[in-house]
Amino acid sequence: MDAGECSTSQPPRPSSASGSSPASASASAAWAKLVPADPAYPEVEVAEDDAVVCSLVAPAAGGEEVAWCEIRRDAGDASSASIRNLSSDAIIVDGKIVKQEPVDIKPGSEIFSEPQKEGHLVYTFEITAAKDQDKNNVKIVLDIENAKCSICLNLWHDVVTVAPCLHNFCNGCFSEWLRRSSSKSRDKSQSAACPQCRTAVQSVGRNHFLHNIEEAILQAFSSLQRSDEEIALLESYASVKSNIVLGKQKNQSRKRPFSRSSDEINNADLPCPQCRTEFGGFRCSPGAAHLQCNGCGGMMPARSNVNIPQKCLGCDKAFCGSYWCSQGVDSSHCNLICSQETFKMISQRHISRLPDTVHGGNPYEKDITEKCIQQSGKTLQAVIAEWISKFDNMEIDRSRLQLNNVDAITSRTYICNHCYNKFIDFLLYWYRVSMPRNLLPPDAVNRESCWYGFMCRTQHHRPDHAKKLNHVCRPTRGNP
Image (cartoon, rainbow, N blue to C red):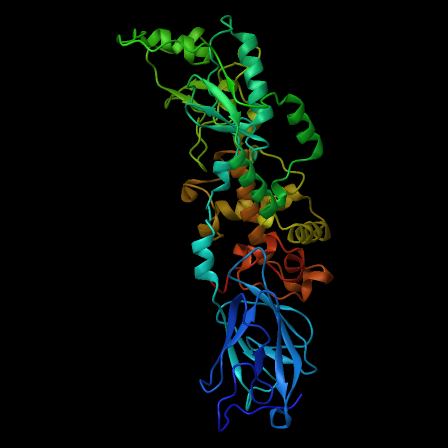
């Protein structure tokens, strides 16, 4: 390909460029453009239906269009794209020489049309369709924690919504809850209580809008996908096929409703064992404050004078398993009781396998960490114990730990299973970051680090990107 100079006596036509400067083959449905540093040259628009950008060789002789590069939009991230060199010579992208392999580019990336910078055009990549896209597409930002069923603590599956409180649950989880509530209730016409807020449920129905969000989350975070056995069990429980009205709907009366005493409310609406019977030398007094367990939905008295904490310090949510165990209450006294394993002291926990959510759910990084631990000759429990000791001794920067009250957390802190998985992810991040490169597996030694590090979103929907680059590192671009 002939080399082209950066300046000419006359600016080139928009459909072509002097020497090897590129020209877009189609301006229809343009979503991005290449902006030349020299204003004498035209901008090159990148079309949706034709991702190949051509250059015009020997324009004085009439010119011949030759494929120069191919730029394609990232399907999962509207703010990024990839470029592939189609010419016989190498090009320079963000200071790196690129031959034939595709590389990621972002708005602001600099692209040189030849392997030598001097005497050749430099283009800046820009996305032009981003603003129009924002107008046409409604983006919903949803915290995954708000898309979880409060009964099983996993992402919704076939989500249903109850009225009037509008809380959401898995179809199978709520159907089983409804079945158990009905079997315990003497009055079959009485509405079941919402597992999350204890409001009397008047109706329940499948929520197709949230079902679409559920599927979108699973596409972005495949690690949240349940096993086939779990899904089959949930679907066997599911009984909500259409909108269902629960209980008898009584006519509204204009008279002021009869107000029950606090003692009646505690005994009727709160499934708290200590409201009915004394356990551990304690029984709830009338009007006593209660906490609702985030695990099972049951209630327990709010007591600040007991040695066992009732709230997870990592998320400030209540869990009842350890409290009821300390009071001598088990499932034979009340079905709405969590296992003690759901809420334990960090130092009392045992771990034998890496959580699926470790390293942001990137399976390649998880596999590398597993190999590193195996090569060390230590068990996972031993490695975690070492890093817990470093955590207690303040040898680790805690700023990346995605938990509440990070400065107050120690190995003797009670946290829930979800927060424990976040804690393990945090420790293993530092385990990997501090590991010498020569101790990494051979296929991971020469990988370059992703610009966006552990915050990279592309790693969740592009396996080739997740495998090619190291993501157990700090971001060097974007918001760290």
